[in-house]
Length: 461
Image 1: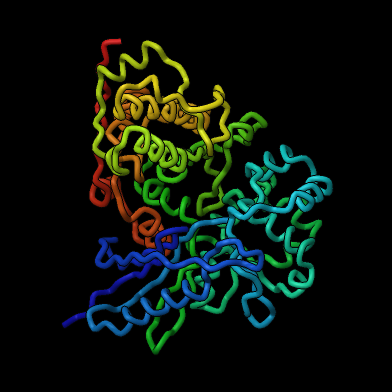
Image 2: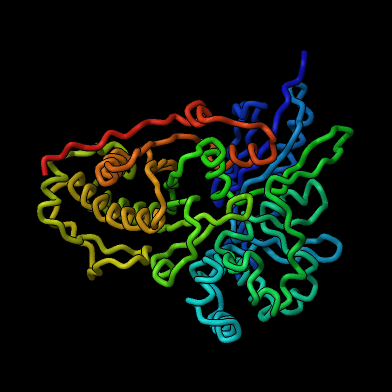
């Protein structure tokens, strides 16, 4: 019996750790999910358990190598960003994998802006809204001034995708998509590390940059395997679209964050863009992707829990709510703000508390919540489109299953070709494609993503 040639992809999210096998046509053959318990750093803050993650990866990898049905040809890694692993001269890990939600000491932030320029200047030049640990370059600055004894021992700092690759190759590299995702490290106009990186001599800790499509050929248990250098998950999720579509498009990636990604806008960010939470991601060739994001999924969950409590419904009831045109039109007649958002910093009318007493039913309050979230969604999409000639919007992620959200998208963007795409493969597929030299065509998305064209609503407004 001939063995099936496969590519392994480890797709590491903050919550779900996923493991995929793809055949040579990118067809998914195996998928495993797990959630690993967190550990804590020296301050007691919850964080990824790096040892547990390594063991899980090793166990899955060895199981596939031992499986008589498969011949492993390649491995790659897509992971969340803004997370550094710091190695000493011998390759030992020096610190916990600090969580990007960990608050950063104010005095260290003050010192950084005092030395290197205002928050707005740094944000604009590095295309990174300022967000403490979420700007992974600031983690290095923080270590230098908060834990100098540890900082002195660092030989290389690797972003998480590159660290996972290093576990297999022993070779330290950097690549564009990880450097370019809100790290504060890259000056997009200069197309090089920002001046502050050189002034603080942090460049010495960052390994040589290689293309994201680079791979390292190694021999493992007498088998030749191609090992990718890893990729940041947002850039990876965008890749199948870029490789198969020639016409400009916007990808709206929905989940905990709602991120509008426009790979066809290379304008420098303005001060106003930064205030609107715009940022740049990087394509695998180093070109910029204009993005704007807001914490939609997070806010949605907070508010839906409150709705369920208020109306005595079980959490999950909201998933069955279908778009109701009459209800929508009635709410739009007396449009106002009823929800006080807790985790969203975009400008909107602030009210002191959420008013649910104006709504007779769960469904009515839920429609109002979606109207208010949609106002912000429209705003962020328009920011990302900017002046580019985009006619198509693809929507992927968790909200493609939300009937109210999708109907409102089709209504507000009826001048566009709006398509819902459903692929549970997300960023894993991009990681598999980036290290292959296989050409793909226009039909690729249709085959791998359940694509549906959204029909605009005919509303009698």
